Length: 360
Image (cartoon, rainbow, N blue to C red; front, side):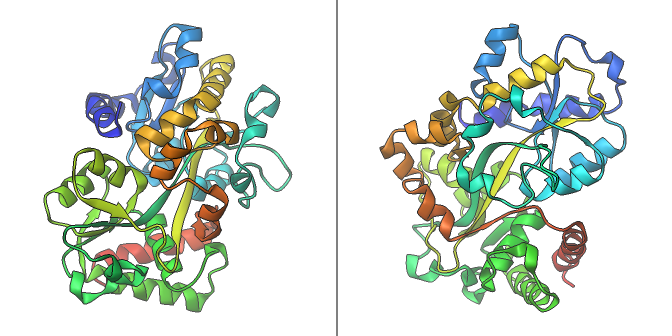
């Protein structure tokens, strides 16, 4: 199932998720678990072993972005598992929302890709306690229409601020992706160490980009429609954008060799405090989604990498090459990993990005 199809199928579920926010935990069926997730990830092809074992799907509730999810959980919404990404893990942990993981119950814990294991503060806290199980990883990368844009015009990320692309640019309405772009553009690969001067420089770059922005996208569907419809020529987009558009015959390409590099994010699952569902089912779901058999589907149908190193190694090399994963070591060498940020720095980014989008 392609991601776009999955998202269309989940529209009713997304609407229902708003109702779930007001339902007491006791009203959730005791014989299942609730997964708080991004729309589309309810795709049964991600967890077939779970369905086989228990004879039914988990319940899913959805969020639009991680800040929304964070606030909803802090307000009392209950679920068993959630799907945050690398830059939010520390914040959720520090807010007391997470239960530790028992790694002895995680069948594929030791098979996580080495490059992900080395991300600072991601999988474990400072004392070595595990809280986060990586699932998928991907990129936010310069993506462009090949029929209207010359490759030489987008060899650098500075193209996003080039006046020739006025009203033809789209970047995500997402503070993490925005500052990943800006950090790369000013030559910073480790955004956790941004100085005050570099933060100002990155913010100034985003203000220059703002002058060219036609659309701050919030959903891949909106961005894909804008590119396919000819409204946008250049985007800072996730892998799935080019994957789904190419499948639909739209002339697009990703420039993963831009001079300043690209951004890599890692998302995964956490156990939530106050969960009412079965711990057995929680771990069964976590083991199902990280099984090496899922890797090929993740790469081919979604355009993302899977966290399981053994699974990725078994994927057809032709498929890996087609998605840009032919050499994972080289691929990660020129990237800004969206590692967990210091809370005060991320809050500063959020506040500044809101000003930038408002034209200030």
